[in-house]
Length: 274
Image 1 (cartoon, helix red, strand yellow):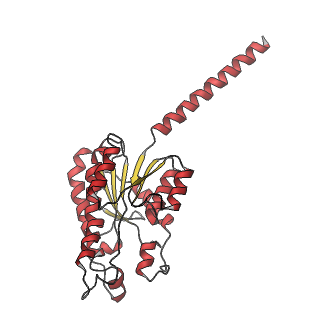
Image 2 (tube, one colour):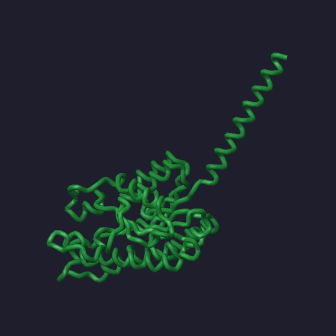
């Protein structure tokens, strides 16, 4: 009798363990999914790391897979991270990636990829370079629109249904101009981010009836390669780290609802009049 009771207890323990393992497996299978553009550095990489740590399925896109050591290391550490090639200026590439993920629900789409290559030379009065302008607008404005268009059905099919664009404090129309900001936020970058804001507000109005929530979030001053390139490669005084900014933005994303969809919001959750 004593051995029979012991065997029953052991069987019971194995059954419970199996049930718990099944729950864990189901939870993993049903994990939320995020697709992030420009995941190889700065804010994009910080987002990928944050959501990977949370157990989300992360589709981390980059223009040059295999050349991004930090992103490769992240994918090696977290099996829930998939690295995909994506250049937001390449419409055919966007279409191809969307076809690969056709039918897969994507709970959160973060439009993070952007450039400020025209900072300084080529983007100030007397030095305008039309090709730089076109490249910046295509990357910062048309790129997110093409990505949103391609993956809209994936977002609609998800539980969370959220699309986010990372804007910039420089998009604020009423922001004062001075000699320093003239060089840092030129005729090209500032208009591109203001245009992105408007494009996302239009998108929000169009997809609202399908239950999609649109967030327009500015990250504040962030010490990234992009910002350092504007200021001669030096750290920007008072700027926060990419991890700090991303942590704030993730909280803002969690709080996005239809009630605050299409509002321009800071990483600290405060609305931004732009």
